[in-house]
Amino acid sequence: MPDLHTNSDLVAHLEAENVVLRDENVVLREQVAQLVVRVAGLEERLRMNSQNSSKPPSSDGYSKPAPKSRRKRSGKKPGKQRGDPGRHLAQRDVPDDHRTHTPERCRACDRDLSDAEVTGATRRQVFDLPPVTPLVCIEHVAQRKLCVCGVETSGEFPVEATAPACYGPELRALVCYLVTRQHIPIARVAELLRDIYGAPVSTGTVVAMVQEGAALLDPFLMAVKELLRGSAVVHADETGLRVEAGLKWVHSVSTTDLTLYHLNTKRGRVGMDAMGVLGYLRGVLVHDGWAPYRLFTMVLHALCNAHHLRELIAVAESAGQGWANDMAGLLCDALHLVLEAKENGKSALETHEIQAIHTQYRTIIAAGHTANPPPEPTGKRGRPKRSTAGNLLCRLDDYTDEVLRFATDFSVPWDNNLAERDIRMVKIAQKISGGFRSDDGAEAFLAFRSYISTAAKQGVNRLDALQRLFKGSPWIPSPSAASP
Image (cartoon, rainbow, N blue to C red):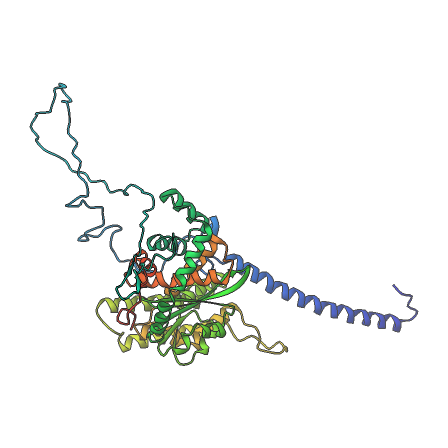
């Protein structure tokens, strides 16, 4: 302590020290406040799982939470219901082969039964794969003939005979099916063909077949794009994809009958416009609420309530806010009301039912605002930061019509699960193979995914559609088959 000769010197020193301590106290309080917020955020992240966030179920590990369901009990017993025919492997009236097994000797006295009377028989049928045979080689010979006029004319080779020795459309279709539908890595596809058919197909040939097939899909992709532009209800989503050791974005647009994927370096409006669909829509666009989708102003928007449900559960569990649990219950009850109305052949809810939903909705929103008052100004530029619960509450408040559009328009679903199911296949491919080495490989994969997904939605066998592609007549969805 410095040498202080008078009381005034002591007072001055203490005052100066007090100022320093006060300044330090302010700094420490700010640091503590920041740490409290950070700890709360980290604790909130630790509580996140697949039921209260967008995390996949695989991230839950061994601490998978107990299942929770808001579905109403139907009152039916589990299993097959009375009157349902059930599903089982039935015998055929006309089998492909017939083999009779005759007893040779009596099991009691060991007498020969060659001339004994047949008193009965029991039939059993075994369904199995046919014997595996090597590749079939078909030689095509195009003859040339000389006309009396002196001109020589050559016969035409079929479309699949592209070289002196080449693989046919059925094998090419199978390769693309295994790679783009079953997500089998390239090297293992080549191994499978060697083991089963004795076909010495190299990995380079497998890649070339996929690229060749993708180039044949241009007419299909253009047709699907036009059908999507005229669809009344369209689902959209996007996800990241590793391409050339970097991050790119896959945009998905789909209906119950159509699927289209697009690869772009941008996630937002630029990538969406490059796909060439969303800007032409005039119906309803169903999405997860990401801001760039709202830039499309010529459509009506519908928000995914599966996302809302997970967020509401998280707010109710982590912040203990009852309004979130009430809102989750209301959204589920409204869904059950719509489903019941559809089962009864109705095309809309009664006016009083819609009014009751809206009244309860506004009551819950008001309770949410009471629990989450606006944050006080901090003196910094921009709007004060809201909590996770506050952000969710404001979204539900600002976009009430989009949240409840499923209740006022029965053609609009409750959630965006259709798009999420379609785009999940992209994540599966990345999880298996780790990504794509080139843009061409990723774009070829997405083109095939668009093709086989659309075919399956419209009841067309995927492998048959691929065989048609390599035979020169790709399957094209008709306007009557697509969603109105």
